[in-house]
Image (cartoon, rainbow, N blue to C red; front, side):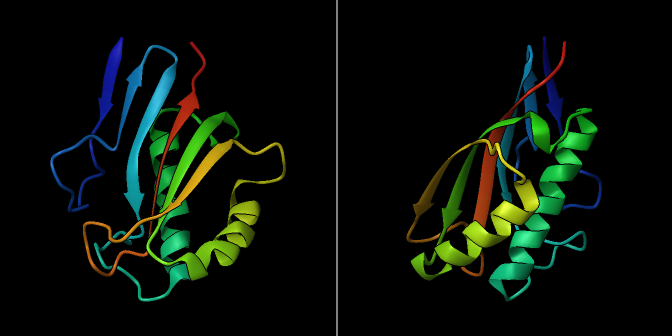
Length: 126
């Protein structure tokens, strides 16, 4: 079974599904730090908080939760944000055990103001 989860109404997004379910796996597209009004805050902390909120919305839509996350890929545009991201990540996705994770510092994301994007995979129950 394949099921697609479009962006929530009112969210301006490129042509993609926010997530796609294939069997018992949910593949979550890269989620940026835009708020519900489509605005991108200036601070890393605010963008991170929005990413977490947006991932939770996707998981809720799929009847899933943070505890079902298997793997996350974190993309940052500034290496100076790694320590802050680790602290915020522990608070958002903890307590341990955490999902497997890869963190990459990239030259740029689609919007020049984007500081973070997170994509992932969750295991779903039948």
